[in-house]
Structures are given as structure tokens and as C-alpha cells.
Length: 372
Image (cartoon, rainbow, N blue to C red; front, side):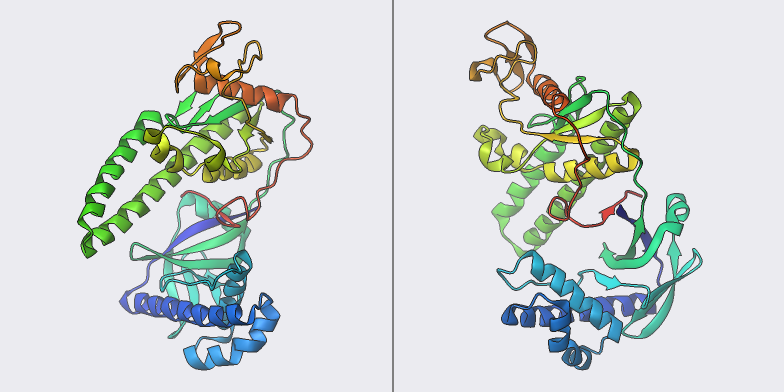
């Protein structure tokens, strides 16, 4: 499977300016190309290249290969949503391939810029150095908090799937992000404290409505997203390790239409809608593939109302958000744990044939970024 390595660039002042200029011009060119693609309803890279190549080279001064990469980037974005013209921010990623990017050992990268080729020192950790031989020569140049990084695509081998002896069921919830069928829970009080803090900050800034408040609000949203991503990496890593160590597969709920089909109290809506459950599942999937852990998806219908002891399903079984008590047999448990046990049991009776593949539609990007 394709994953990415994050490599930090260490440019001097002149090189930093060259990279920033290249990024701005590249995305300006993408916006010009996107206008033509939308106007002509053109989703073919070959046809779009015939329409815009010469004009883009002349207007923006991009190299031949950067122009080709800009056209390809626009086509990919247009294919995802043909209903509107796509827009690229001035700091959007610049797509490089082996014709315009090369590496000098493990210490320097040579990139084509608006100022010609520049050779820039790079910083790698031990993990990146070990994985470096898998690099494919494709990378995105990104700008994060004023620092430039290369997201280098690598081919990471998947471990052979292990025939599971049972499943760990995972219930995704409101009070706790995830609860497993063994009774383990993840990120309950920690997430709630952070969520409440950001919620108070957002309300205060939204009430001000000033330009500086809007800038601060944008920064807070970015920090929230980073926090959710970090926690999702931690949760997914622990769950996959637990499944591998016990020889079990992982059972997950199908989340299609989860927002519309799940009813929660008004006070809990921010918690329910504010977590990236799809992202968490995509992280579990790709980590499971690398570890050889089988992932099974099940229909979660009535898993929260069904007794894991006797199988009786009734709305009255769910006494509160956290408390489950069966009206038929009297079985009592934490509601999330009970649901997770039902998810595991439902996966157990399904015959696993192949591991579900993560597609670009399921996850935020076709290449999954590995944590440093």
C-alpha cells in the first residue's frame, strides 16, 4: 500500500523565498487551468493539456513538468466534484515527480523552482531513513506553519492477513470516542476537556466578529483538527496492537449516513458531530493492513438496544446514555461495552472473505501519512 514519509526541508532565506514563489505561482496556474476545465467540462488530462499547456507556460513561466503536474492536479480535483469550479489556495501543495525532484543521498533534495533548481538540506528521523529505500520519487511540497516539508510517497508492504480467532468489537460514541468489547475505552475525559476549552474559545471569538478574532478562530479550528488527528492515530495504533497480540480481527460499524440516522440529545450534538469517526476508521484500516489484522464491517442497526447476553432488542433496554439494563433477562452493563460486544458477535457470524480495501472515497487522501 502507498503511504507517505514527511521530510523537513531546511532552506536558507533565498531558497525559502524561491519555494514560496513557486508554490504561489503553481497554485495560481492551477486556478487558471481549473477555470478552463470547468468551462469546457473537461476531465481528461490529455485533452486539458492540449487546451491550456502553451498558455500556462507563457503566462506563468512554469517549467514544462511543473505545468504537467498542475494540469494533473486540476484533473484529479475536478473528477472529485464536477459540480463547481475547484479553487486552490496560494499555499496549496506543489506536486513533484522524479523529473523535477531528486535526492542527493539522505542529506539533500534538489527541486525545480521558479528560480531554477535549488539544492536544499533535508532533515530525516530514524524511521524515515529506514524506510527510504521504498521511496517512489513522487512527493508533495507543503508549507506548515512557515516550514516546508516534502510528503514522499513510499510503497509499504502489507503483512499477510491473519485468520482471526474472534473479533474485538469497536463502538464509536459520544462520551468516549471508542469503546472495545473487552471493556477498554479511549479518550473520554481528555477529549471532553479539550473540546469544552475550544468550544468556549470559539463562542467568545464568534461573538466578537472582528478580523483578528476570525483569524484566531481559523487557527483554533486547525488546532482542533490536529488534536483529533493525533488522538485518532493513538487510538487506532492501540486497537490494532491489541488485536494483533490476541490473534483477533477488528469489527467496525458501517458509518454511512451516521449523522442522519443517529439521534442524540441537543446537548450532545457538538460531541457527536465534532469527531472524525471516518478518519479514525481509515487509520485503523491502514494500520491493520500493515499488521495483517483482519477488519470486518457490520451493520450497527440495534447494536445499542440489543442485550449481548440474551439477544432481546428493545428501546427500553437503554436506560441512559451510559447504562444498559435488559428488560427481559435483567443483564446490566455499560451501554458502550454492551454495544461493542454485539458488534464483535455480529462480525463473528459473518464469513470473512477478503479484507475491505480503503479507497480514496473512504479516506481523506490516497496516500496515508504516517506519524513521525
